[in-house]
Image 1 (tube, helix red, strand yellow):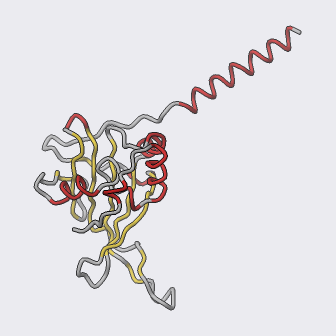
Image 2 (cartoon, rainbow, N blue to C red; image 1 turned 90 degrees about the vertical axis):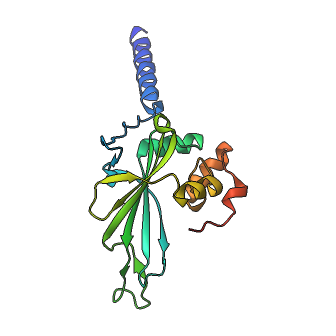
Image 3 (cartoon, helix red, strand yellow; image 1 turned 180 degrees about the vertical axis):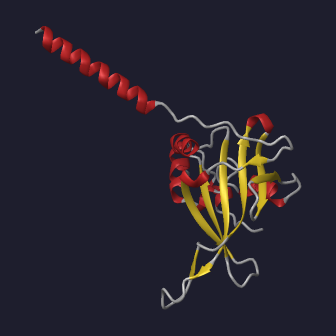
Length: 192
């Protein structure tokens, strides 16, 4: 009888500890700014890939934006439908590469050269969302001027928390589940 109670107590303790470990949210790392106010690039190679968009912008070859977010921010967004403080959304800009002769119909892949990056950062200590830009080969994002169209476009047309989640189905589902999705802005067209 004593062994049975000890086994039940051990099992209960194990389940309690396991549940506590799994219920803890991953902590977001501090944002690394330079002395000049730039943003040190995070190592986004193991981040969650949200999706990709393609833009032609009068170029013969399109450009891809591959979007990544820190796993801790992604987990919290999926639970609450809003991005937590210290979220960094990383847009890797790549040239398109022709898929010929691999596919007979041609097309484009997102494996071209790295052209630069754009980052959107939510930092309450800096007043909320800020945009950063970096050209090819740079590892530090420079803050975009507040007069840049990205600020007004995101403010007017974002579906959730200053971000265009309307283009990423899993993010839309989480926002709708949490009541944070703005249908009226999400259905409006987004142009540059």
